Length: 445
Ligand code: GUN
Ligand code: FE
Image (cartoon, rainbow, N blue to C red; front, side):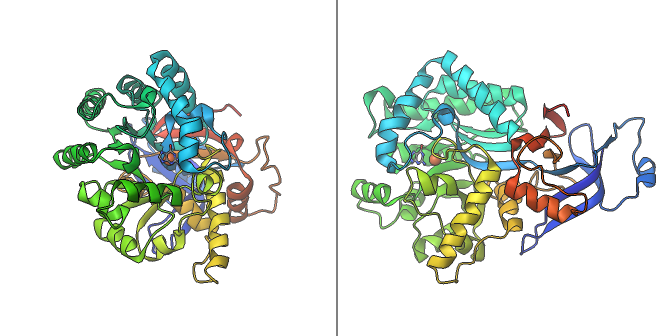
């Protein structure tokens, strides 16, 4: 059980944030939240918790608890290339920086070393759930899944399918082999986490440019046979990519038609970027209940169209949307950075739309990083906030730590502290991370 300040998003239409100075969260040994008392006097805490069976953690006066962050779009093999290739357009950046780097995951020792560091790095940022693209290599992808499970993160892990339009050194051997490797990675995850408690395989056609039609069709068949599996791809990211896709698939009017033709747009689809959207495509994503992984950092710096997605319109239309670091293309692995860049980019869109598409408020950015991400991953019944019955995925924030967030004044209320954390905090302020009630990262204060 945890007693102290708790902050989380509510599933209200306005995505209100609930800021509770003296809350008590009770978590079962299985990691499920069994009680959430929202206003408890210090003297009453012991009467609400069976301290014989439950350890009671009193947060220190400089701490508060938030739900763990949900990174809806993340390339694990790009961990060591973050920040490289600034300003390049997507296809040039893939050829120059990304494919040579991802090809190195052919070597299992390399995969172990980089993936281990990457997962530690994301947990350090308070990311309790991540949707990972792997490389094309099944062995490395299985290593990624093993390490995620060992370190206790919640994740989707996908072997990336690439059957064309990349150099021979970074290409699946054949379409058939690509699909076989996918099946074997699915089987591996079902073996190590049979009930899908923490990990699921995510079908991961990199994007249509990398996949032959037969590959997309094969993945669509796997999706139909395994309706529990999520699907992820890059969608309407940049003009260069959209033009190349059109040339390869002239029979489709839009990427929405293309991916839905192959059975890849379902309520479990996580579509990264979605920067360029027609009214028809907005309607299709809404009808098909697809989720959007909004990645403002990469959109504005690398690979993208240097134009962030129409976030306000997704929200107005009730299309599920969360945030992604797009770590790799995104130079930062911090969800706080993604939240801040989402706000910056949304304000640029407000100006561009002459005030129609309002910029994001802090509460909305926070919602996107937590509960919105859970909805995109179809995990909103399990995580995203602290409703009773959900699993306890959380970060403990401490504003007294050395870091940039040092200017908390004695008279600041919790609302102000929260605002300062979102706008000026960083991973030095994240001192504890829990997934399913298990402490997966701790910094001793
Ligand atoms: N499109 C296809 N592959 C990628 C990738 O690795 N990063 C980004 N940002 N876009 C892509
Ligand atoms: Fe990406």
